[in-house]
Every structure is written in structure tokens, then in C-alpha cells.
Length: 84
Length: 266
Figure 1 (cartoon, chains in turn cyan, orange):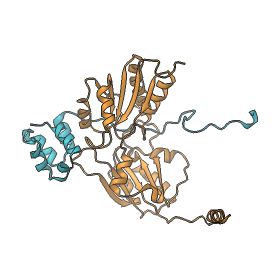
Figure 2 (cartoon, rainbow over the protein chains, first blue to last red):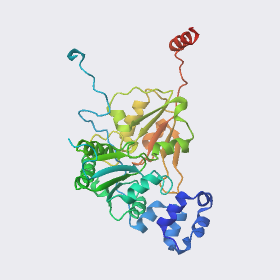
Figure 3 (spheres, helix red, strand yellow):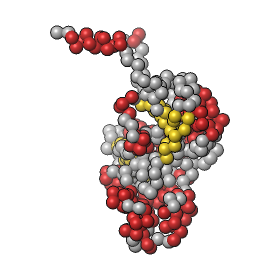
Figure 4 (cartoon, rainbow over the protein chains, first blue to last red):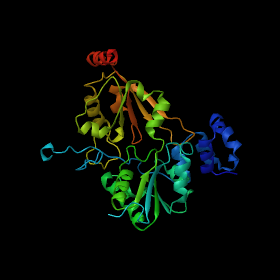
């Protein structure tokens, strides 16, 4: 028997499972042990329902903002040629 | 300043890729499994559950986000969280979705500070949303060129766009937010973005709203629409705007002549 995270990991890695219809992929890896609600959420590809069933939801996925730093490190600083 | 490797703590920032199970490299997984502590900033709660199985001490950085709180503050707290454990002498792994160095501020900053303090710190690349975009939409950035900008930065600053190349605008869901505290900005802000783009593109020009698949039973979002429809489209923080070229390449005859002259020279 597999749990839903194990199933998703295997689905992510296995070309045969990726090519198969989702229900057959579920049955092929012992997914019959999953609850009816989890299985339904997977088959209908309902991420929100799956997250609620698993009790896990992200607040935010953004890890970038156009922060203006005083001295950007990846931009070369021009040297003052008069100092040469 | 201490030489790198003098100090006991260390930091590696890795990417777990975009799709659960599909993109994590063996090396990234090994760093996660072998770290003393892992901090995560991932795209989905389900992916957090997956990562949590890889190490006994996995700490999500999600709790640092709050709508209404500037993300600049959140990112600095992320860096502090990583570095406090490095300074405590631990082997720290920061696991980020996609590539840890692509449109990701905290990993670069944490590595910069760790190195400045004499700790060993580096980044391992991952499969980014950009990589998935090329595969899913079926174009080669090398064919016509490809410009990438964070959508708000594109709006806040004067940029020169080349409409004979692809233009990719990231984080259009929060386009125009100067507070960095919102999780979405909405149609009125996107109208200003479209007006800006309309200087180079016709409103009927077909654009694509894109989102990489993060769970393996999903397909990517590849929704095509006229540029003029963008303000009213359903856009969230995961969405990326892809603008294909609207003009052909314009030959630079002067440069070509000079190159031909070089070729002909004895």
C-alpha cells in the first residue's frame, strides 16, 4: 500500500506511470489503499481538495521582489579613471 | 576575515525543480538528506510534505509570509533563519522550488553574507520554471532571443524591449505593487502594464499566460489570449506572461558588411 505522497513521487519519476491513465497508475502502485476522498481528488486533479485533505496549503510562493539595493553586487562598478 | 572552510557551519542552497518527483537532482537530494537542518521555500504545500520526509529537521519558511507584510521583510527573515543555524555550526541546506538562484532573492543574499563571514557557502542549480516554459511552449530562446524581467521591475524602470525577441514577464500577479506586501494586484494594475506594452505590441498580439506543472498529475497552464485581454484574465501569483516576437529580425547591414570585409581579408 502506498500513501499519496509516495504515489506522487513515483508518478513524478516513472515514465510508464506518466504515460498511463491516472486511475491505472494509481492501481499499479498500490493506490487502492488511498481513501476514496484522496483518490477522487487525485483523479479529478483537484489540488485544493487534495491540500485540504492533507492539511497542507502554501501561503505564498514568491521569493523575489524588485528590491533596489544601494550597491548591486552583480553590476560592475565603474572605476574613476581620474584616480589612475 | 577567516578563510572559507575555517568555520564549522556551512550553507548550500539547492533547487528541487518544479514538478514533484521529476526534477530533483540526485545531488540536491543528497544535500537535503545529509544536512543538519533544511529550510524550505516551496511552491505548494504538498511539495512541502514531500520534502519533509527527506530529513528529520525540515523547517518551512512559509510562516514568515503574511499578506500585508512586505516580502522584503520576509526575505530578510529567511536569510536570518538560514544564517543563524550556519553560525551555530550546522550544515544548513536551503531547499527552494525551481532553481534557487532564478528570481529568488534570499538564497543569493544568504550565500553572499555567509561567505563574507568566512563560511563555506554555495548554490546548486535546479530546473527552473523558465526551463519548463521552453519545454512546454516548445520554443528555443536561442532562435530569436529572449528577454526576462520581473513584471513590477519592468513597470518601475525604463527598459528597452526588443519586439523581435521573446519577452517574458515574471510575477504578473503582483504587477505594479510598490509595497511588496500584496499577494495580487488585479485588473487595474495590469491595465497599466498593458498600456506600457502597447507601445511595442498591438493589443491583438497573442500572448500566453503560463504556469509550470508542480504536481505530476497536472498539465502546465498555457492560456493564449490577445494582449488586450490580459487585465481581465484570471491571474494569480504563479502566473507568468510570455509575449512572442511581434516583428521579424531586422538585419544590421552595416555590421554584416564589416564582418564580410574581415572574412575577405587575406
